[in-house]
Amino acid sequence: MSSGSVNENRVFLFDSTLRDGQQTQGVDFSVADKIAIAMGLDTIGVDYVEGGWPGANPTDNEFFNERPDLKAAQFVAFGMTRRPGRSAENDPGLAPLVNSAADAVCIVGKTWDFHVDVALDIPRTENIDMIGESIAFLKTRKSEAMFDAEHFFDGYKANPQFAMDCLLSAYDAGARWIVLCDTNGGTLPQEIRQIVSEVTDKIPGTHLGIHCHNDTENAVANSLAAVEAGARQIQGTLNGLGERCGNANLVSLIPSLKLKTSYDIGVSDEQLKRLTSVSHMLDERLNRASSSNAAYVGQSAFTHKGGLHVSAVEKDPKTYEHINPEDVGNRRHIVVSDQAGRSNVLAMFRDMNINLDVQDNGKMTTLLQRVKDREYEGYSYDGAEASFELLARRAFGEVPKYFSLSRFRVMDDRRWDAKHNLVTESEATVRLDVGGNEIMEVSTGNGPVNALDCALRKALLPFYPELEDMVLLDYKVRILTPQDGTRAVTRVMIESGDGTGRRWTTVGVSPNIIDASYNAINDGITWKLFHEKAKSI
Image 1: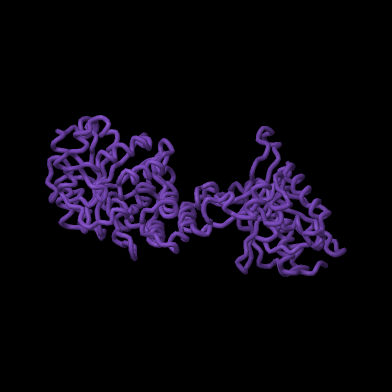
Image 2: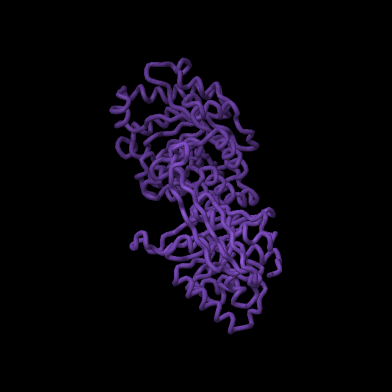
């Protein structure tokens, strides 16, 4: 098969999140999830979006019946070669592929003699025929037919002649891509580079792809090694999702190829800027937190904490950043901690639009010491910018005293109700001083923290109607001294929001989880009142 006038510098991106990713433990995509993810992939310039396996399950069947309206990417259906003893035209597994709404198809077949002998228990020549006949049939029905050479690297190391015969069967039958799969994920980059180079002696690299699993934490490195050796298609998943240790992470590969090599991946500068949001969108769909230390797109990818680092970054970001974070839709974060110096604090002031008299060295020194003392106690302002802002403004005397707490009491009552259902009710009582007014309120809630929050809001609303639209959005607890068991010091982080769409996070620390929660709630309310320019009573 001739490679034609293919641009040999072009590397094509094939995403298998919707199939390989769904094999991840705990992942189960709905049809709506699949549509949203496919559309997201299309916006970042992926060439192929593999939708799943038509005929394998009701979700994939429905998804292919409602195929997403992709603007640029080809929509791919996945399947396997014909079965032994059947013709391709009459194979029940190939029929759903050719009848699907997919633009192209990708089928998997065995290329390791061990699997053919043991798993399939058929003659090796029959396996080779199954590959070629399946590709030839599919090529007459779809724009492109691709072959995933399962366990290729293990097969090539065991029996290179048989493994190559399997590839050539697909190539001679007209496969657009022959994808070399490191299915067990145990091959290292130097092996990938050598074997792919040997394969290119018989099949042009413009028709070779690479599909790596991450069992040795080398899937991205192996994919890059294959490209260097001549392969021109990379298969991977968003955020490295996949069975066992995952697949090659396209979120890392895309910017590495575009920003650090001369290969053309067909991704524009504007599409690259959507990478972080698409990566985080997948995590939102999975209802899980995004990895903070993910390369390129993680919150910590361009976060600077050490004072010396921040000082250098303030002068020139290239001192500690390998790319401009905005290029991938991320941003720089400067955090304050017990390692913080003046540069960290000034950078935080700038990012948060805090205008304070930074020339007042006495107050700056006091603030830095308070940060260090608080961090020693267990406070963390990395991700709790609202509490840091209040700490800074209080050091400079800018935060009014809106109210003071006299006392609070929280009770949980676990009992059987009149219908003999076991119920647990939480009740909180707060006593506040608001401008000399002694206020006491009682409120119930869905748990002790919610009850306390409701009681505080109930007491303060008559004086501060600005709190009417404030809501608690998220609540996280971290045990700081796990060796102490139930007596451990806890850190509570609370995210709040309001009707304007603002979101802010505060932190509280205490050996008592309710007390820690109160500290975070107090900061959240105070931050809201300060930014509403509320007048202290």
